[in-house]
Length: 159
Image (tube, rainbow, N blue to C red; front, side):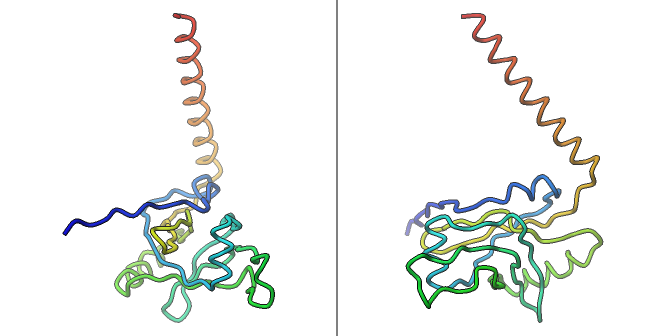
């Protein structure tokens, strides 16, 4: 029996996470949402910018994730900043507790996407960057951009 490959549609990405942290490992987690939150996600009304993950009573929650209220939701809308539970296997949760106990590590949401009809969140096990690391990353990106610009410039001159 052949397995169907499900298409995934990215709803939101946390670009700031790659600027502020070194992403060492990534994990995929389900997220427990209400119906109006899912409808708002389908409309792309979500912000991952200042979100982070935290353990409470052995369960993992995402904090700071802003899902705008659904316009047609009236009294069924929920608080846009409420804590949302992340769904992971018990052994993954135990592993993450151990990894996060190390100094300087945190769990940051990297992206939110649909996998089939389910909503998934990519989480990154991250270590914070120092200011000089951020400057170095910016300088490296600028150099790469400059090289591609020069290559294109030389290619058009040869024509």
